[in-house]
Length: 146
Picture 1 (cartoon, helix red, strand yellow):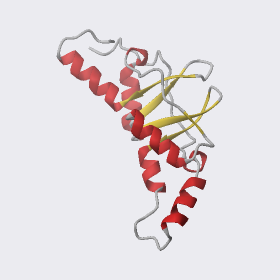
Picture 2: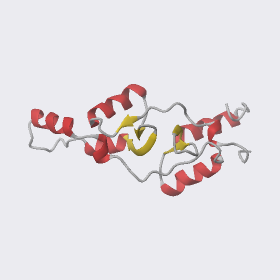
Picture 3: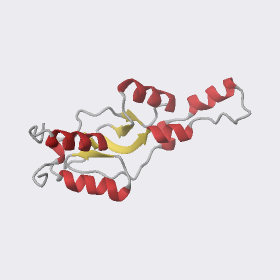
């Protein structure tokens, strides 16, 4: 049923992105406002990393700290995306079969893959949510690829 379906048919585009020098607090705010769990990190049009809501949570201060609220806020403001982003990113192309993308996500235990064109330019992202949407629409007999 999905053998002829490509990533481009189900990816999310355009993609919200962020720069490496952005403070973590700003990245977290963007994720909350846009209701996304991951942000590709770009330098110009080149993909240089990925940051997830899990990365942000891990970098957040612990409640068990002895630092004051002012010290915590200062340290949090100094922490940038580049310090916690994942740099070795698995990607797919728009023409990649959707089942191959799903297999990669399963194999590498990742919930999203940036989609890049043949020049390496970020053109979209395919996530678990996109795959779930595809499955649900196919069950409802809606056209696959919309």
